[in-house]
Length: 402
Image (cartoon, rainbow, N blue to C red):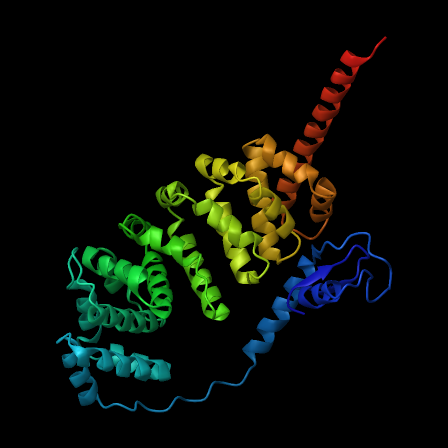
């Protein structure tokens, strides 16, 4: 099992397996053959923790990875490739691609490259020498694309690049180059650009502001999460990478507000949430970003203004993963309890067995904070229900003939 969930019968199954059983038209519990009065899943948090503990213990005793082959390029050959990169001509693209293929081959090759004096400086220099008015010729775009792809690869290594990353973030010309590739590059380079920005944003709070407030970057990232194409795998990767970068940048409240104020941003997240073909990882990241957005008043307003988002959040609460469940509860708590939005409350109340499902979740092995939020939500729905009944009784009294 990877994601254990329980049915209303109390029997636990792996989420993907039981979902497949139900999707095939079955309406019974496979173990007991009881008819299901509800097809909702309750995450089994206790079993999840046990599985994780077992999995970690297995990995600790796994066999070591084989030693990678030695570098296929000599130190002199790599130096010649680096010198050719600085010329920024047609040959520059093939030199960058050769270096990327070499770096991709193994971790040892990547360490070999970064230890060559001037290698990283040359790559950063390629992205920095465009200025604010960037040359957007096809050749220049291709050079920038290949440079970003290599930088994203080598900076993911566990080395300490904090000083280099700090200087890159403060380099406005470099950020302009990344924004240009996000706007005009191919899909692979757009994905790598978003990934590189996430690496740069991880360093410190100021990094998130410098990146998020750079003209065009948030707009292009929001475009990236709406990627469509014939290659569904690449499209999903683009969406997931764009969401990850937006989540990282949204650690800053100022950036959260900029995302919310970007026209249609919350609706784009809602569309991803309602898309039945969205991957689990995508749904989790959408809910995580909506959770962060719901932490500010403007974000709660934007969520509540869309009549379908709250309903979709509630529907996803039991059908994706434990992480998605937690994110969904926090969002509903923010808009229904903290913000006291009547439209959001009504949307949950109108859902089939809405309060009952929250009660079931509250009684599961969820965390103390999630249990508290579920309790707060139930109080709100109880008050709302009494208010509706009171209003109905008053209206009925007025129309009574005697």
